Length: 342
Image 1 (tube, helix red, strand yellow):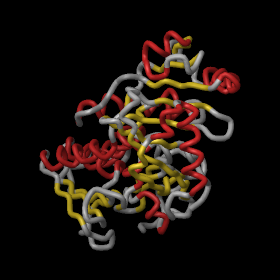
Image 2 (cartoon, helix red, strand yellow):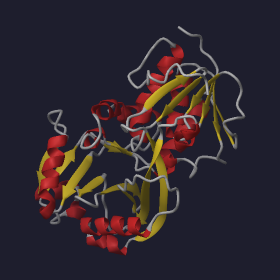
Image 3 (spheres, one colour):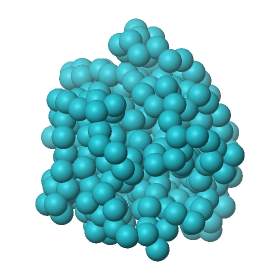
């Protein structure tokens, strides 16, 4: 086993902070370097939904996402406040009933992972939706958090453990030694097969509507997820665009999200738009995360749309590699492990 060694983590988003905490909890001296002025918009984590929903993600994601993502709920709950374990509710308009049936089939790998609700069951969970939908799927084991609050709390935990965060530092101004590169899409300069997948989001304020858990509204062209942030605030998302354009939110994106929200509840037509945002999710061709070793640098990347869901499992496996360099976790990309150092 290797001695506890000094580690520099490059990148202060969710992947970098989770890795830093996992390493510090194992006793390694860890410094995080981040080019931004502080936690914020330079990281795509800023625009995340914060849904800890591994079973729902199984509708489109590969099996490792569902399995590894199940670590996330307990991991976050043990380290930061504000994790809400209220499950997820998946809905569809009557005309889109086949979409709900398909979702149920694709997420039924584990018995009991979801329950089919009728209109009464929906109203019991979310009274604001009473009379609006006749069927829904309820995933009771899932959870959600506020990503920005969670990252701030995780930073405080890391520093409380003796870790150091240095902002306004570029990746090329770091000491020699073991480096964990968690720069997200910025690591494209070293990871040629990394791509960006654009996502757009809105935050709206609608205090007259009270929804307490994440909702997913299924639609063949314009799906929506809505995540409550408290005090009448809701995050709207679901756009997934194969584009590396980092520009602002498009008019089409805003219209599609608001139309879907209106279909969920007409009162959202009166909501105040508080914030819009867009960024690129880093992804490899199969949309699964990778851990790659190049000399003294370990890359953890490719979390795609599953940053908060997969970062804990990735951090655990990375910490195991640092403790024992002979260990090869399932996310280690063996085809790239022995390339020359970057």
